[in-house]
Image (cartoon, rainbow, N blue to C red; front, side, top):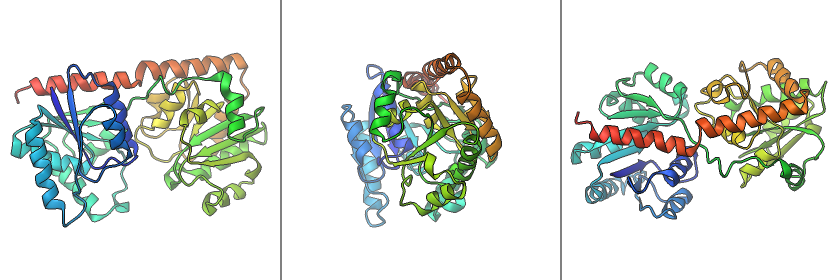
Length: 375
């Protein structure tokens, strides 16, 4: 079965990386994938090419080249003659819908966000969202990577006729436990080796609610010697906003700002507990990645966090630093045997429910069913 994947761009981002990782697990004996990007190439495109999958890049964002690019995409799709078009994200959904009309092809949409604050986006994105709503009854399926995302989109007017949830997968062979390396990894990150270390991986974004995180740390440190490591874009000492929040809660001597980290598995493996303090999420990949590394999690009750964590960690109400601190302390003060048991449970839950193999299996079943379906 030939499948044409259409995506807005191939620069590093959540959706782009998810596509690349999924394609690593797609059964190439049954499915023949190709990828078209509406924008110029990017690092993720090169990763997909390395899998032996053809990637073609166009430039729909350039007003002068947009018309030529569209005809290029149309010609490319006609030559590929796919059995199914699978578009990822709003703009690609529109382009994919036009292709499906012109070439008379079946299409599936993939939407990967929830609780979208559309006011923060430009005219093009608002137009794309409204167009998606208007034509949302046409695709054979609209897939969402979280139940929270599906419920939000149904609420704002998307058709529920063919809605389904296919949650993100995590590479459990890459993100794996390494308890014997914890001391060495902390030394590499210039973090004390003999402290209880919590951590959060996040870009600098108000929705991550760093106020609640630092307040919770301040409360917890009154009873235990707990340290916090932060990594991600903007998590650096030259970020005046983040350092101001740290000073406000007087936790500067216990917070490590690590910035961007290339080897994220080593960050997770260096932790005792992963924390997510967000006000809003869809499907937070960081939780499944941490759990796959055998690191228990405590998260605010956002998006699909409760389903992801299950009984392998803790979920608290958002914007409640006292409750967050209590769960951090509960785990920090538990017996070593209890910590190891919860870590093992987190790893098993990630393997059983959120592996990339499971995600690929779910999508492959949908592809087969939708292509065979005549109407």
